[in-house]
Amino acid sequence: METIKLTNGIEMPLLGYGVFQVPPAEAERCVSDALQEGYRLIDTAQAYFNEEGVGSAIHKSQLSRHDLFLVTKVWISNAGEQKAAASIDESLRRLQTDYIDLLLIHQAYGDVFGTWRAMERAYRDGKVRAIGVSNFQQARFFDFAHYVDIKPMVNQLQCNALIQQRTIEPLLAENSCRMMAWGPLGGQGVDGIVKNDTLAAIGSRHGKTASQVALRWLTQRGIVAIPKSSHRERMAQNIDIFNFTLSESEMAQIATLNQHDEGTINFTDMNFVKYLIETYG
Ligand SMILES: NC(=O)c1ccc[n+]([C@@H]2O[C@H](COP(=O)([O-])OP(=O)(O)OC[C@H]3O[C@@H](n4cnc5c(N)ncnc54)[C@H](OP(=O)(O)O)[C@@H]3O)[C@@H](O)[C@H]2O)c1
Image 1 (tube, rainbow, N blue to C red):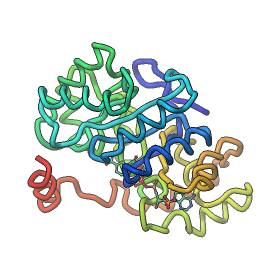
Image 2 (image 1 turned 180 degrees about the horizontal axis):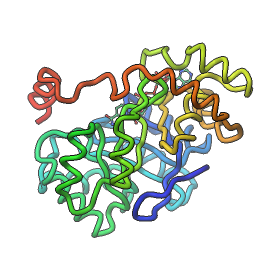
Image 3 (image 1 turned 135 degrees about the horizontal axis):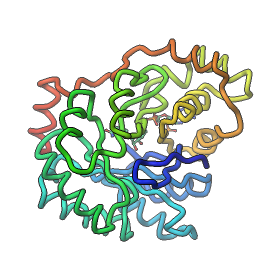
C-alpha cells in the first residue's frame, strides 16, 4: 500500500475503507472483509454508531495494531473541551485500542476550539497520533488554522472526479495539511462516477473500471481516498488500483469533469446549520 507522510512524519495509507452508513450489526463483517482484502486504514466516526463493530473486527483480526491506521471523528454533540475529552476516551474504549491514528473534528460547528484543545491534549498524551478536521471549507479552515497551536494535519472533504476541491488546495498546501476524500465514488445512490463514460473509456485502456480510475486519479493527486462498499467483490475492486498509472493527458482529461469544485453541500446554509445544531448540538 502506498502511503503519504503527514506533517508530523507519520505515514498514512493512500487508500482506506470508509464505514459511513454501514449498520452497526454489519460493521464487524464489513471491516473483517476489508482487512482480508488488504485495507489497513479504516475511517469511522462517533456519529456512525459503528465504532464498536470496527473495534471487534480489529480485535479478532490477526493483524498487529501497528499495521493498522484507525480514523475516527468527534461529533457535534461532543463539542467543547470536557465533552470532547470524554468522547475520545469513549471512542478508544469502543474501538478496543489505546490510540487512534487520526482524530478529526467531524463538522465545523459548536465549540470547535474547545474540542481542538482536548484533541491537542490527547495528541500530546499519546492517545492520538495525528489530528485534523473535516468539512472545513476554505474560509472556515483559514480562520481555524490561523488560531490553533497545532495546525490540522488533514482536512477530510467531499472530493471526487466531479467535485475536485481545486480551490482549497493552495490553502491546505500553505498549512502542510493533507486532503482526504470522502464520497470518492460519489456517495450512495449516485451513479455519476461509477457509470461515467469518460472514466470508463480511460479505464478500458488499462483494463480497469470507472470506479478504479476515479480512485487512482485521487491517489495520484496525493489525496487519501476512503471508498465504502458492503460488497466484498467491490472492496477488492476498489483497492486494486496500485498496478496502473494514469498518464498526464488522462489526468488532464479527468480534470475537465469538475462540476461543483467545493462540494454539493453549503456548510454555511442557514437551514443546514440550523438542522445540525438543533438536532445534535
Ligand atoms: N466527513 C464526512 O462528513 C463524511 C461524509 C460522508 C462520508 N465520509 C466517509 O467517506 C467514506 C466514503 O464515502 P461514502 O460512503 O459517502 O461514498 P462512496 O465511498 O463514494 O460511495 C459509496 C457507494 O458506492 C457504492 N460502491 C462502492 N464501490 C463500488 C464499485 N466498485 N462499483 C459500484 N458501486 C460501488 C457503494 O455501494 P455498496 O456498499 O452497496 O457496494 C455505496 O453505495 C464513508 O464511508 C465515510 O467513512 C465522511
